[in-house]
Image 1 (cartoon, rainbow, N blue to C red):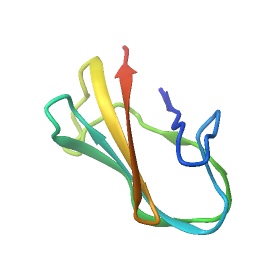
Image 2: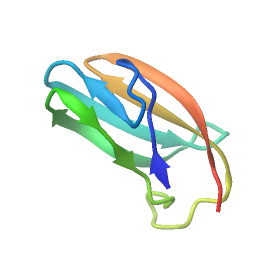
Image 3: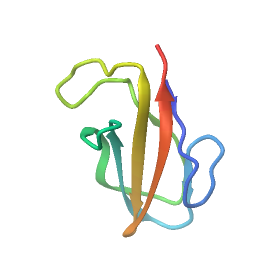
Image 4: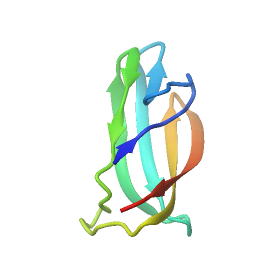
Length: 87
């Protein structure tokens, strides 16, 4: 599953940042539990970026099909959106 983030700089196939930034990206279930950290305080250079979530949780279990939320944090700004995982 390709995890596309339409976010702060409105990237069609991921997210785009205009200057080097510290990025965090988290996945949450519908109960608000954090189930996976895709990116944790990693520096990204200005460019278009794509992130792939393999559908696993932090404890290496397969996530069930359903609705999930992602939260992207970039330079202390935060953006949350929903997504659907289909198997």
